[in-house]
Length: 451
Picture 1: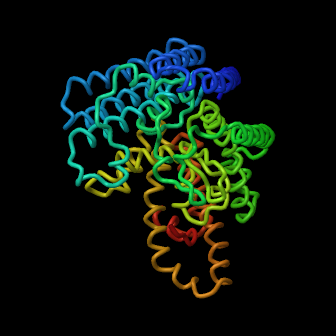
Picture 2: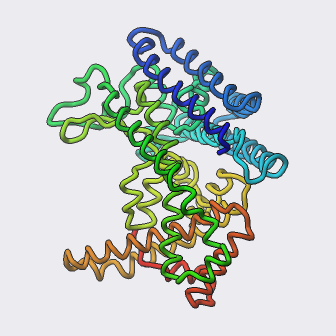
Picture 3: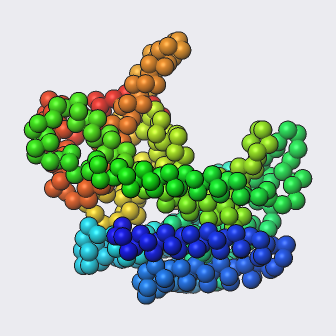
């Protein structure tokens, strides 16, 4: 982000946080109607979008309006396919023009970031309407039954879901049913599914106060931001392909530097996603029942679990805890429904959704190979280490190191963006490991993985 864009974003999100507290206290469902909550949430969201992106924010309305017209004018049997093509196509058009016409490699005025979240919401909604109004009950999975929508949303509900002030700038994506339950103040999934110490959540007439959780998440945001600002320039990713660095640094030190350079890119995501989660929680959205000890859970729409990411011992564990809501979207829209090679299709859809930089495609194509290799290695190797706790501990240590290096190796093109630097990095690593096989061979042999 440019400094100006970063300031705009932070100011808007902090104002959204204060507004969220006001929204929960003074426009609580017990005090006002869903109509008023929808109108206020939508207008505030559009105001924040205009403040951050100017008239580029009109793209949010155009994309949402086009797809709503498709939902109304076409039958429920095929509208989910049309909405996916139109929403993703419009997003891709905006991403391509922003990258190749205006400011390649720059993130100033990146209005396509919110459009990525809106695309998830539009397509999720279309598939959930298709499930609820077209498919038979016995054709749905348990999760699809839970998310299925039985009536067409009104225009106000639709724009409120897509453009509300809590999620307009950084998400996260939520299911439509969860959002409507929040707006209307009706029991949601957690009131049906969770029990604590023999007491059902139904005994709690209102969700508990999110204040403590919001403070905890804001503390995480502050720490993440301080770490990012203090170390991001100490370990630049570009040094991994610097000729002097490559020529004069032992390979083991290059591996350590690769890990550190990619590690320091993550706190900015921790900051953005945790702040977005805190804003939703402050508004009263995100309650997910109670833990076994009776403490409330506010992780219904959380986008990451930092500890599980940093100590992940498998590629799958890392992906399951990183950008969680996007992973759910990919699973529900693509992986569960694609009849042919769903793993490859899911990674390709993810690359298309992320944007037009070639580095994104290199990362996700590599991700296909890593995922398939991880499954094979887990199936063949993991059983040998389950005989004793010490062997299991050794396996965990090896798989943690292997997972972290494989993640770094996979994600470098995502940060470098261009083909030339990315291929230079891959070529150098192939040479230094002494392997002349294909890229797939390098990934398969990099470490032991488990799912």
